[in-house]
Amino acid sequence: MIPVTLWRVCFWLCFGLTAYLSLMPQEFLPSGINIWDKLSHSIAFAALALSAALGWPEKGFVRSVLIPLLLFGVLVEIIQYFVPGREFSPLDMLADAVGIFIVWIGVTVLRSVSAKIA
Image (cartoon, rainbow, N blue to C red):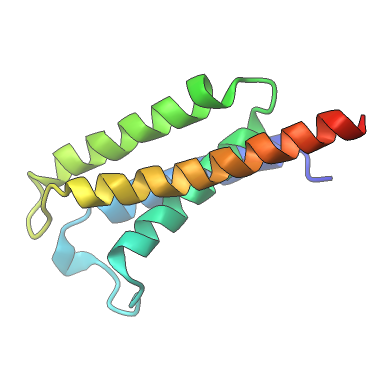
């Protein structure tokens, strides 16, 4: 079992990388990344949600993971409006939410199954 502390480190590394890549001007983004934009949003926010859920398992998912990450996604899009070569995109926010909700469903199902087994 991976220690909670390691999941917290993973969360903050993912958070920093997501913020950095989301807020840098388009011209400075790595050219080798050819992943579909919306998929990359979903993957990044799923990684954030999963590492947060595993890093702080005693906290409620909705209040401590889902809501803050949704707000982070909205904040990133608002800031991107002012970054050269970037734009505000409601579809990016939707893709962020999809990644978070996929993890939420998975965490809910796993906790339900674990409770039945215990």
